[in-house]
Every structure is written in C-alpha cells, then in structure tokens.
Image 1: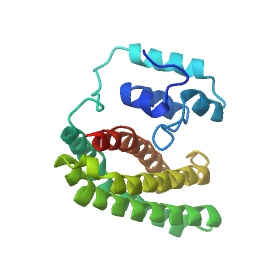
Image 2: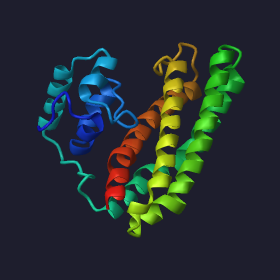
Image 3: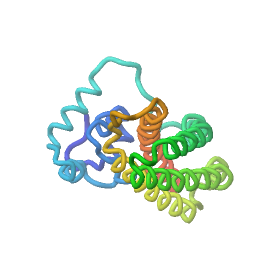
Amino acid sequence: MNINSESRVGQVAAEYPLATRVFARHGIDFCCGGGKPLREACAQRGLDAATILAEIESELAAPRTSEVRWDQAPLGDLVEHILVAYHEPLHEELPRLESMARKVFDVHGDKQPETLGELLSVYLGLKAELEQHMAKEEQILFPMITSGKGAMVDGPVSVMRHEHDSAAAALRRLRELTSDYEVPEEACNTWRALWHGLSALEESLHQHIHLENNILFPRALAS
C-alpha cells in the first residue's frame, strides 16, 4: 500500500476504492475535501492517521472481488458508470424522498416544527440543485468529455466543483438536523424510511462526487 499520512484523501480514494469504506465509517470527507492530506483530515475528526492507515490496509487485505480502478478505466466507461450508477437512481430517488419529507412535515411538523421545517427546506434546495446539476452534466459536460474535448472543459468543471461544494454543505446540514440520522422514538414508518433514505443519499453522493472531483475531472482536463 503506497500511501502515508501526507497522501491526499482523494488520491487514496482513487487508487484504493475500498478505502472509501473506511473514510465513510469515520466521517472523513473524501469527495469535496479530497485535496487535504490524510493527516489533516484525520486531525479534523480527532482521529489518529496511523490507525486509519492500518484500517485501510486491513480493508484492502480482506478477500473479496476486486473493485474497478476508475482512475485507469477509459473515460467513456467512467462517464457511463456515473450515469448508470448515480444519475439514473437519483432521478427516481429524489422525488421519492421529497414525497416522504413533505409527508413527515405535514403529519409530524407540530412535534419538531423548526427542525422538520428546515429539513424540508434544505432538502428541496438540494433536490433542485442536483436536478439542474445533472442536466448540465448530461447535456453539456459529459458529451464534451466523451467526444474528446476534455481539455476544453475547465469552465464547466469549475462550475460543477462549486455546485458539489454546495451539495456537500446541504448534506452536512441534513446530518446536523437529524442528529446523525438517529431515529426519534416517536417516528412512524415513513419518518424512519426518510432518515434511512437521506443517509443512503449522503453515502451515494459522496461516492458520486468523489468519482467526478478526484478522477473524472482531473483526467478529462489532462486529456
């Protein structure tokens, strides 16, 4: 394992995809915060970098089917993977989560009016931003990359990175509002499903943004 405490988090995630499981486990930002050295990222979370490195090494040593090295796969394959694994599910999941968020607020808003009201507002903003973001990628950025014009996408990539940062901020606020997705005792099934769905959305978006920020964009710009 050719990494150390000075290796950048995004680089580690790109070279060793299974390391993202360890990062997610400990709340280490490997997507928008991928430019930080592992040492710094661990310090911000009150973690020991050597312990995290050992955990990554253990994760890599466990027997399992090898994961795709997207930093080495053809760019067209990576774009297709992002569309199929992340964009398509989001087009279905975002409206489903909106429906649940509205229902929980309508039925239980009197129990936690400020929290549930802000949660609905933050989620709706995130949903709108993601839908616009994906449309720009699907209609403009990705076709440029797959047609061999990656070196010309500096402007669009800068916009996408900024929007990724905005989405990451919304995810952090949702986690704060839900107390790390701890389900309240009085929660109904819809409320529980909403907390689970938002947590899964966060995990998926972290992987999604990582693939774009740390692998697709740098490779496209260098092509």
